[in-house]
Length: 133
Image (cartoon, rainbow, N blue to C red):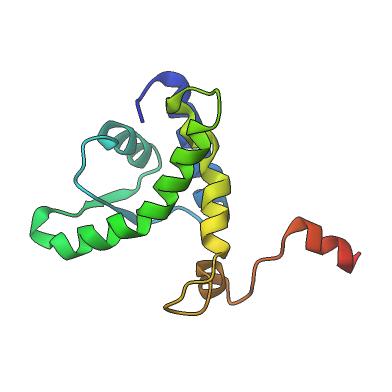
């Protein structure tokens, strides 16, 4: 992602709404040592006073875990962006939906979704709320 003004604002807004408003400001965020998002993440973390922890080649196992966890997310965002007429830089528009889908997907290793592990309850979709009204 580039640090163009419009893209930066969308990325910052997405991070604010999807992470900070839901969970609070994290003390630190772990990132890989890749340069493709370095400028953007440096700006983002500085603005929100978040400590960035960079995984180095000396800690290759952690880097592999991070990249494996991101593969389905990156693939889904890539497919959604490729199917649209939007600029390739606008992948951030699709990120919230992809993160939601990833968060409610049950993992084979734990037999729970990440959302269930974090909050102790299953996700409730807006459509399901109609049954309670």
